[in-house]
Image 1 (tube, rainbow, N blue to C red):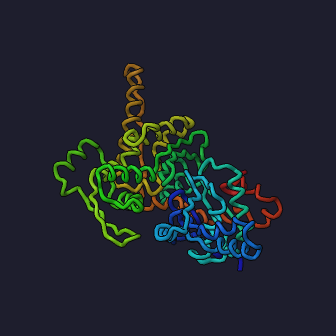
Image 2: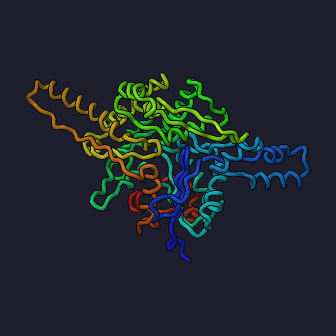
Length: 427
């Protein structure tokens, strides 16, 4: 049966989570942490080649290849047993451990999606400004190990913009604010093409919000088991955090009515099974505040997210700026905090309005600058925006023409993956 008649497999690998599923769906079938648990004992046996005979060494190597887990199961195994070591293949949006990444894809395809890779085209995602060599590695693993018929590697920011598609409006010019687990990137896109020279990024993202919440709870003396504290802080972030409009007013509100705002987190220690509980107070709004006031968390980076977005747009070609301010699209799980888009729009509007007023004052009020419309787009699926954009793209009839095929790979090698045109005619 022709692979183009079957739905494309869409896998969006992020630093924190990987989303996987089939094109045509609205949400991914699985959303798993991007982590692999490897069994130490087999790995050490297969490495100690001089001490083992060939047969024992081979069987240890085979067992090391088979005995590993990914996602939530990997986290559980590592906490329950000391024989498993965690490996995080992606760091700050870039793949750093290709062996672990290959194992991860293996489980994604065979254990989760349960499909034969030879029967489906694949769409994978990458960060903007990824090295061309990384695309080659990706193509090599997919074509050589999994023998797939066709591959398309898409820039996640373009897919996030495509996710904002509605029937009335198909804007492919906008700014994608992608706040993931490992990195925060502001990527301007004009007519579907990334303006690479204007990309801005800060190393403060979802993971830092979690670490800050963990730190605040520790300092306050909450009794959290050390081995579970990071995971508990992550759950607190996802369930209870919100963005406030004014940090001083929020402190006052909490102090006046603590019973109304203080929540309680209950957990169970994995090793002993004993229950524990801790209060969640100021960290509910101080966690997300890290993105708007980074100085409360670190002294290394003190540029707030709204200022970064403004810098990004101001460095873009002048004829695209109004369109970019008008279409700021959120993407990534760390943009899901309540009222996040309202706070971002308000702070960015202040910066833009101040500039317009300064320009008017500079000309003595004779020339009035036209106001700039600032609009931050928020939609219910922004957590899966990149995956959904991939699902939309892979459902179009032109998609299969734009893919690199197995025959092209065999003829030209992995270098074909260096260029991924929007459509074939646009090299």
